[in-house]
Image (cartoon, rainbow, N blue to C red; front, side):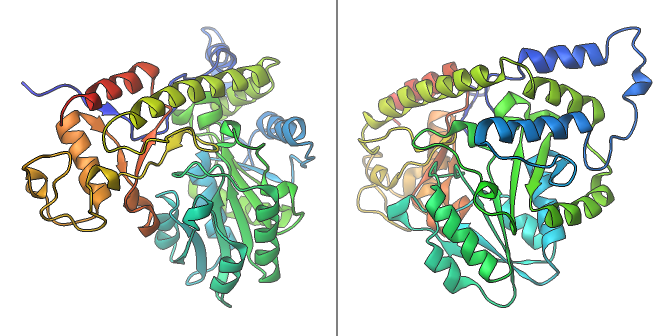
Length: 393
């Protein structure tokens, strides 16, 4: 018989699941006796009118930003579909796409699969790995088509303020490149209000977003691309060639949830709940031997990105002969090949403690020495993870 089930802190799927307004709308859409043929159709290629209008209303309510639902919003299969479509429509084969280092794991594969060339721009560790506009300007070449970034940042939890975002938009605009801002974690901003890049520049800027984190509907794949009307129009031309359209009934349920009068309060309550449990988890973690003693919630998002080099004193890179939390044990005693410390820590946590996390170097060389922990897991799982980590490894 195997050991205990691993406590999975690797994914950012919120524990709370779809809100009542979404579930009630979906239930009504498929109610017995209803004519399901009304929904068994292809949705409009740009997205159902109801959902695009609701998304426009969201930006107006939260950011006082007026978007044309017909010209500036494209509904996609989740944020990944929006990112894929933005790269496909906004760049050509062989062109360069600038990416932060570290950054979300899917950016580079999307760029590579589409035949574009990813170019990493190191973030500044002293600024939470945020990009410096001067560094981006130096990295831009005649072949640069786009800069992709996200804020709140996955994996670090840092946030771009409006001044830095505006400066980055000016740098990309001067080069004739697009700035694409992935803002899927927008409702988990804590240190400062979230500002979408499209609120700072009229042209040359797009945002990628979805309902996955906001509503807890990750599996329903409801995302969008919004902003520069010409760029959205170009994306709308290629989007049907890959997916035709997003599920019609799911779009209508998403629209119902966004326009529900209780939506703003629900978002605040859910974000506060994740923050509360996450803070409790990180403070407990910081009291354990070897972990940073000042862990607290990052500026935004649903992830923590702690430095784990303290778990292996004196080791910063390869780890043959490592000691530390494993007295008398060399090489971790698990037959691991030499490699980054964060990879060793992630594997040790999984195999010795039954706690699943992701190693930081997965997000780029800038993430070496760190691990990413999801704070969006159910509260009982986060508390169980602490109980396991409190025991001797």
